[in-house]
Length: 140
Image (cartoon, rainbow, N blue to C red; front, side):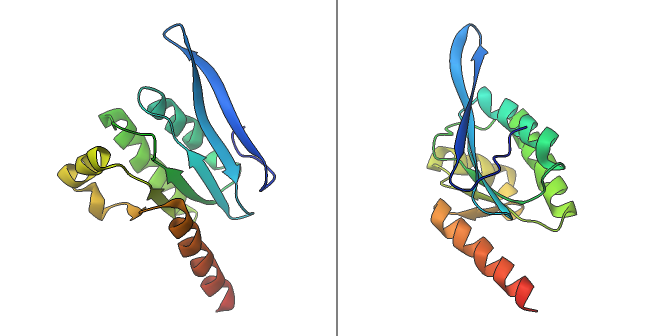
């Protein structure tokens, strides 16, 4: 399972790709309702997103994806992002993409996905947005 049970604990997952050791995403359970994932660049990105899709239903939370190290998003990764967004929305949770680099942002703009996904400039803003949203929904 890829979700970490403690907010102060971060795990990095390691694997082998084309004979080279690689580090897969690190997952941090930031709170009971928020998971932060540090994504890797392609070709690992697609695998990271597939793992998130496989594990999401066992622990549905809001998800913040940190794109700081992602320089390219393949069509396969876009497909998995859309599936992950649908799965998260079905649980009445939010998916936020943060720290998207300019070359990656161009892919989202060109495909029109800038209107589909929620973006923030950094992870702190994403977390604050979720906390305010969570606080508002509990306060109703």
